[in-house]
Image (cartoon, rainbow, N blue to C red; front, top):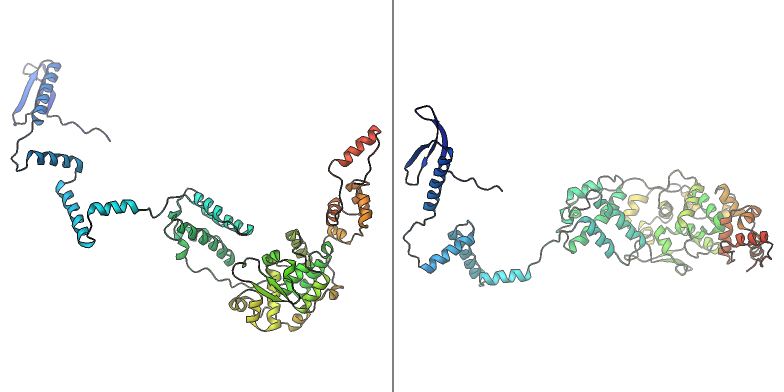
Length: 478
């Protein structure tokens, strides 16, 4: 802010005298109203004269004017102090305001203004803490303890959408429009619901910790309804899936695929399923994404019992994601979604039992979901009977293609464990792989599964060096 402009009462002007010579005239008015109009031949004299007049005016303005008052000297001193403290506000207005507050507190709560202010100072807490969305996200993720790795990864991916635009934006500044803008990029109803659910969880947490006053998701429109038809496997695709499961890695996936197909478990429930959870007459499901909400027993269909006799369940196979991709290729299905095996199972269960309540209970879902997605998906009763009779013995004529390299690995005639143990210590795995017509990684997996110890890294390099130097080779078995 600039310095206020000084008021000048007198000015120096250049004029011409009667003889035509230049003169310097000082003009202005005194406080009494007297007009000053005096000329000088030299400019310096005119400036000095104007300075004397200005000084005289300033001295006269600083002289206090005596006024009559009823206030005592002490009251006048207090009044001057109060006026300075008010800083431009009317002293009468200020006094009246605080007197009104005092009267209102006396009438309503029978307390003084000082007591009310002291109470407010000791109990006041700010409604919200100003925290950027990036910092709030880090605290939120750190607070997600004792949850599944996939769930935490889901929260991380969901809340990442909030920081993409402006990571320094304050958490309480997010509005309904901001959330709608984020979710507008997801046309798929399931994706829309998934991200909306994760964002809602975050803002509920932020509301509890006073980082925002409300959850903006509470005022969003209802999520869109998924009316699209579900994807299921045809009977031929189911046959190829089961056949491929019996061939891939010596049937390591057969029990898992059979449980998914004939019991309708979710992929997450299969990952958490333990061998002791598979009983003689039912499967005890306690894991998966509904582990905190629902525990259920799924009855074993006769066809599933036949599969588990041939391929006992020992837990979800290692590398399940990779093996599932191989099985997917073998089915030659045009459309594949993450829960397609479960969709197929529920659709065929509904046509077999004709009881949506029972099917919903066994599969851990609602009757509404059954009627909305799975009713009348399969309309051929002959196909239904054939599916529930697909025992391992009825797949002998089914042909599948697991890929050239994978098929070789599956159909190779492995030597006995004792002979294989001697072979891996007799020559490097790269040479042994050529003899057995497999890859060296397949030999490593075979040895790991059967507990056969392999030479450590650098073993064959050391043996070759000894052979060159003529040293005696060490025994080649552990």
